Image 1 (cartoon, helix red, strand yellow):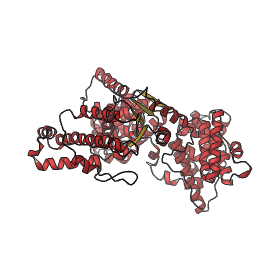
Image 2 (cartoon, helix red, strand yellow; image 1 turned 90 degrees about the vertical axis):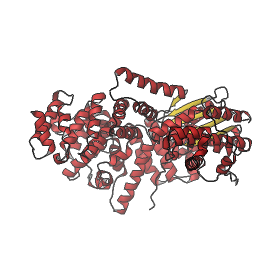
Image 3 (spheres, helix red, strand yellow; image 1 turned 180 degrees about the vertical axis):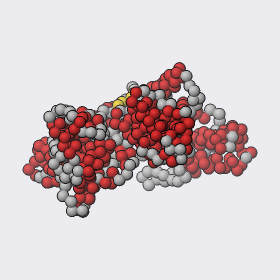
Image 4 (tube, one colour; image 1 turned 90 degrees about the horizontal axis):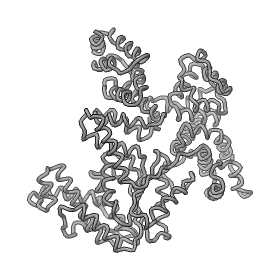
Length: 637
């Protein structure tokens, strides 16, 4: 039996109904009356931005748009370059110079512009690595007096521009490095302005109506790379006939801009300075991106349709799958609100094709899990696909291990695992203690089915998260699990439960960025990250707190994650104080820093949290053999 999984890469095949978004963006960037323009294609991580970019690229490279040139730039691919600005400018120029139709018309101009980029980059490198005097000399042509440094800088700049190799289309090889080196010298102190002017002149000499530049995966880059890329885009903002489409999570871009300004500020900033920083971030984005377009999250009916079409893609032949997709596209034009289900797929296949048994099994439970998957995975198609891939792996493992399982039970458990890892771990402990039949789960299921809350006395030491509406929906979802032996299912899931950090694999990039900033040790970055955390949705906040808790438990000697939780508590997340205390209770006292005692004693908390903090300090104080114990005793006195 071969294992079949779905690719996690972007695709031009539309299974999400996102063609309407691609068509809208295409109509904007090819309208001469609107250009020049910068459009922000905004959405969550895994929300379908890259797939829309792929559709746009395919559409605009069609002969129907013969007066449009579409260039693609993946910011993450150039993450390792010294200067992302140079990488973007060079990529745009080289792709335009190699364009099948427009390349021969602009090649000479492209070489001259690449020469300008080289000198701009060389000047930056000179200032960074050698010093300001040499940087000025290099920019003005006086670098010949220091030949060793000049040679190194020129080689570095040319390498960054060209990649050191040859490229071309239709068999034509173009050595851009050679062409740049042979081009006449033209460096001066006005490289940026001259670059913009010459680029506009180059486009004006062609019959090009629209130059569309797609910037993808910007939110995967480090903050400094994001800023450099945005700065490069600013060079083209006023150039006629140009259109930029920037695909990113806007929260990550805002965070990168805020970090850039935070690094320039002193830690004791006033409230007015904080407001100025916020205005700078807002103004920066609004001035650069004229049209922000936010992709919506998928609804339950769209998630159900997506799961069904993924199943067709895997279980049917390409010809039959093509029939289904064509039928669905017509169906969607008539009804965009209803899920595309088993009966519709049968109709699409007709008498000439019969849906496979595996497909029917998949379709039988996709409707029942759609609501919970949508709530748990926030309508994120990448998360859905990853969950289905993980499910396929576990089904294959069950086959190899000769374990008989129910797909419906496995799917329901994995929805909880992906939606709320903490509750999944709690359920794992219950079923292990009760030999696979957790009594607490039975009590919760019975209460949820009756639309009643289980009595607290019947569920001692049970997380209140089991009473959340989304979790209650999960408990009501069929099949029920209280009468199922769950031991085999959790044995299959041990790949996740064996690692305390395994749930981090599904954490959004924004949460990871905030986590890195919070533990960076940089006061400015930490303050910005704590403030940005206020915009997180509930599940993302939970992920961030859990990551910091794990960090404390794995590295009790570090103070950065402790300070991070304190900063979050002070900024916008009081629950962070409780998360901090819970993490510290599980840490060995012998490895803790003594400065921790005063931090906990001085926590700005009241009520129950204050009592728990005081109790923890008093507990430490009883152990005089440790540094933290002696520091705690001293703080109490």
